[in-house]
Image 1 (cartoon, rainbow, N blue to C red):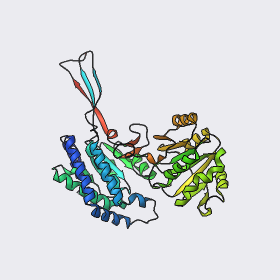
Image 2: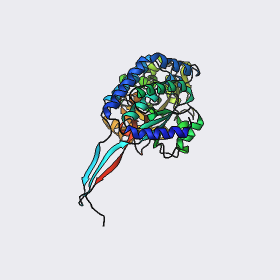
Image 3: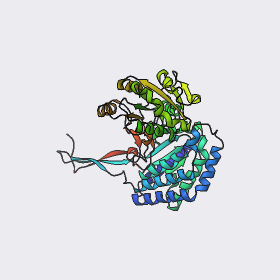
Image 4: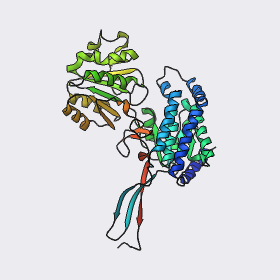
Length: 415
């Protein structure tokens, strides 16, 4: 099928979505969730085909991999989305002008959302659930690494849509080619909003190339600052969880910033990381503190390329600072605006950090691993926006709606 034909079919299907009430949408989402669990074997088989083409040492391998537990989590997230209130038809403003015009602003779908993503087969189900619930049709463009998984998932969704007599073009998967990406980014009049989800290279390409509107879901260069008043007991747990829970995801910790007054306690702060064989790239002060107190083969010297890097691996940078101002400046220079954390028992420093850090999600005494639509109670996420114009942070149902004005009169004319 030519891509132009796909764009046309999805655009038409988006108008049919407006005729499906929320109760039916919820039933369909529940049915897809059930189908995920009853078809685990075939989904995992397709995923295995993808995994066999990727080197296990590749940081993206973990993102690409589906397991029974992950499929169960995906199904549960879809069920959660089905229980959420519809984001459509909400009156966000209502006023009557002096001339009697009655004006309402109500929430409506964008129409067609284009999603470009890499080795993340979970995104296929997440995007469908959020778009379908919010009345948006979606065009998916996955990477070649996950092509077998994505094809199996969209085929499964189509089977359920057919059972409920719903146009299957409310979700379509494009070929995993560069040409498809280029055509998608130029599909003016067909795609109302494009959301790229991946690394810096992908985001930059989409931003520089797209003629359709784009919301960036930027790369996650994540910092955690252990303040001079930080609690070691919770600090070591927060650092370990933020770094090792899942190293390949965008909320994983990339750089630990430590106040110099606590440098002697750095080995204790990093002790749990050695269990997971995390390589530490340390500046001079932290390298000296860790020498003899952290596995030698895992301890490296930091260089000019160390900071501002999204590792997506069992690797972490360490930076020593003399003050909270210096920590904030480091984050300003090297952070990506995704998620930042301070570990401190000082209320004043916590407030300073919250007020001055420019990021979508700012944590005090909690790991950045919580930056996730599901964890935020949103059911799932379509991405995490790091830009300031429009949505910011985890994007779910409300963030993929827009609005229109409804104006009712009775013959008024303008002077």
